Length: 487
Image 1 (spheres, helix red, strand yellow):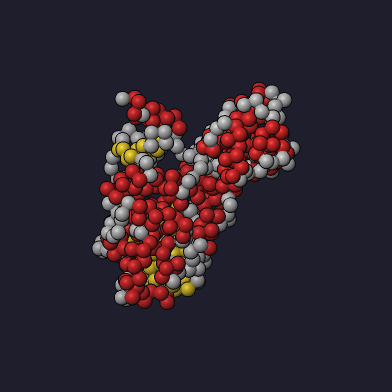
Image 2: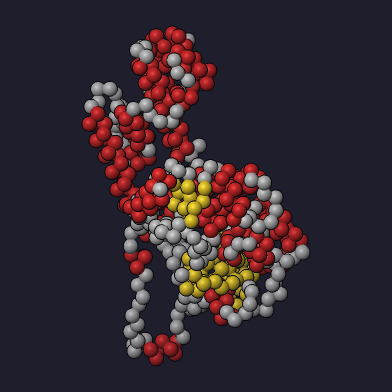
């Protein structure tokens, strides 16, 4: 059980205990009286009321009868009073890693603890959590969190079976059998989960979608966003939070993992495992694997198809692979590998923002921008020879390339394996492409003074808040405007 799951389970047990105590005191019964009626020791019942023991279902039935209520009332997730809610919140905070790291004693919120003191303690814990989140929301912490996530996905071969299963279960629930997943199919999925989709031109600028949990509405932009975020994918990502039972992120790393999981879920729905594997296996048998074909078969973006290929390549086809998204200037924005290709990294192990070798396919493809379709190239590197296929796209930040690469031995499964383009990369050897030609350096070193472009995002702290980068005031005002009871 994860820490988040364990905390949630602990809160549930304590809530049940508090509700039992609430109904017992409301009935004017003592612990001894109720314990005698249900056939347990008073000490055992006390442990249940204080959340230290989970009652069996048979005991819950007996307690409900003794207290003149129902099992449903005892299992209601809402605390029976404001004080109980505060005690449960304090208990959860003191069991969290943030408080445990302080090595401070645990406060037992007995009935003698004044309400004002309880309010103050809960408030202090909330402020401690907020400041901790702000302190961790720095570029360095974000890069470390992203690096840890990338390493974890490498161990998993970028494949999450539990999310694959959840995606296929939802597809089956709405009767999907084959073909591209249409907007109508996504609407049926939302309806199956009890939500409706709405398109809003005034969606807050800091959001990609907004979910109104009270009125079960998901708000989306009225048209696709440049850069590949289709409306189907955005809607599925919003639904994924509900399917995967996400709780509000407690750290930036938690937020980042949730973001990765919902993106994965959307891809697993748009390119279902059983259909995608069937398609790719047939193509491999014919030695005609192609990211373009995968893209066109399921009606997704080229980047989406490339990402999805990395999910299935190793786990389902036995092919080790790497993926990169690189800007025209060589900046590495995203990357994944389990084929031992060597990405440039900083001292923390992060790859984001690093410059890839000028001789890699992800950069040489820009020299062939006039060629239709994918560009293929073999590259000899210190880690071995890799065959790569790349295509150029254009987003709000300019041109970028999407590249999928595999070790030389696996090139035989792909269309384009007969590529004649070949390059040699000696990076990280500086003489490969980082140092200027000696003659040019001699001519211009003392005569040049360029003005460097400052990448301000490197200097800034990450936006704070529960959902980093989201303006809460905009979101709340938007929801208030669009709530059904506002007409």
